[in-house]
Image 1: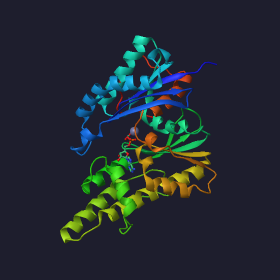
Image 2: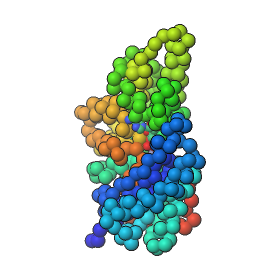
Image 3: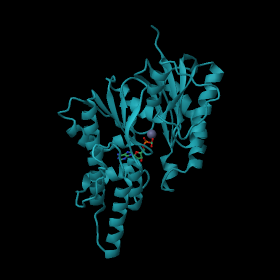
Image 4: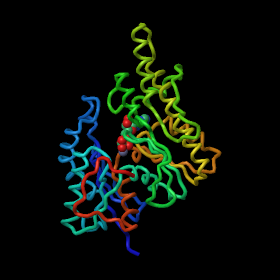
Length: 334
Ligand code: KG4
Ligand code: ZN
């Protein structure tokens, strides 16, 4: 059987990324051009700036990936691309680049869901065993996704308000930390102690849903009160206390759901999967569990195209094809 090569493009937020994956699981190249520096002074991603950077970077990133792999577009079996969710202007750059390449080279085109990509990043490390449960924790999503087979995603719990990454970024802004706030809080938390007892939103008994807006408000109110009283709170301790609450809820709910559904694997996905506290807590929680814990290496946690190629390859082999009318879909469902 001949080797199969899948090219992927990801431009849903602030990284322009191109990757090539061989035979579904072997990573050949993974190029990521980050725009973080351009957004930092605004304290968050500015959609208009993101789109412009993607336009500047897409061709260069594509050329770099092909050069790194020592391959040409003619060697690819299919072109896959993130069609959503994400920023519409940012997504459009990737979608149109993918459509242009696929049309010019007469290659099959496949649209990929960004979160399916985050989940499939894990498969570049280890083969999936079903049923599996994925804890998805990114800037826009926090959900527990049950997979009984490839390409099937059943959301058994999700956030009712803020995503975990969003809460991190908002709390970081209140602490006047630079964007993106998640890694900054994580770094501070390592040096602090849990001195403040912030709430944990367990919600109804046996609910696998999440809520982080109450916690976010509790942190902001506590900082505000301290300021009024002229009381000094160590930012390290605020970070450690906030992180303890987030990590406690995420790891506990993931564990309860994994037990309840009797899954073979628990896989972590999305930017917040890079969090040191969460990684450590999950390792401890699942130490004696029957479920095998998979956490991607750091470079595959945050946005990249390797994960889109991994998910796209499976979709392609299952027969999924996009039409030439493929459009960016900022609200795409998993
Ligand atoms: O998956 P991702 O790269 O983009 C989305 O699809 O949203 O996730 C980005 C989010 C941001 O909110 C960022 O602050 C958070 O992931 N993040 C972290 C860490 N690294 C990235 N949050 C906590 N701890 C980290 N180490
Ligand atoms: Zn993402």
